[in-house]
Length: 334
Image 1 (cartoon, rainbow, N blue to C red):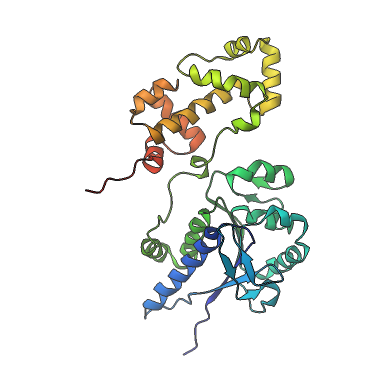
Image 2 (cartoon, rainbow, N blue to C red):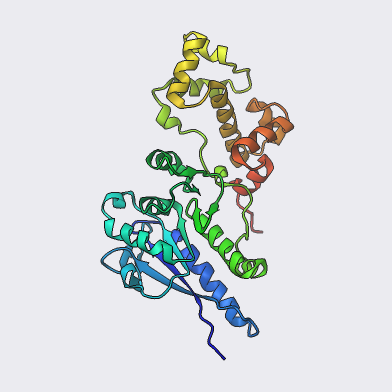
């Protein structure tokens, strides 16, 4: 009987990244291989997991103050790679990683699929692998990424995105979501679900990356009209904050106010007001016992239906689901 050849999963831990970027995918594929090994009648190959250093050393420092000791350096891999996963990418390496980027570019045509976790998308972009593709990355880097690579279509709502044989994922824990999706693609939903249960994970998390992101980077708007209006708006959310009132409070003509506001923030005043209302509603959902109706009124979001519609538009998740996921209170042990 011919011995089954396992799929080689190569995870490249980038220096200075979070440990979960690396450990999440490693644990998923290792757990699945163990589950397949327990099934004597299984005809599936399973996975062999390999960590490969992109540096001249096998020792990779992480942001979590733990060092990863890789089994090989990327240039030492001679076997066919099934799935290549780039876990994180330090911005300092954008201009100092020519050798690794060249290896990545040369290796891509030889793999079945290539993936990135979090800002690993930068490495794939630098290698020219993402040209014209739809990708996702950590929500906090979306604007920088889009500005740096205008030929790549960025959507930071999903936890992960597939375009052909290129898979990109969002923030740190999204590497887990992506890895489970790859397992489901290889061996079906039942095995992916079994792995998720073994590791006490969701097979598919509800919502999108947007539920974790900040809708407004107010600190970056400190000297803009929006930044100056923000504290006043917070105190008047229950009122009608129409554009003419905002312009009047800013001592500007309506036309000039609109023009300057859009130039400084990239959004209309009405859209900004809506985002402020949703951001404040999020805090109430996380930190208070106020009912949905009370929150809707306090934030100027109208009734429940209106609040849900607005919340879904910005967060891709309902207010009730958001509260269940992010409520700060811990369960009481009796």
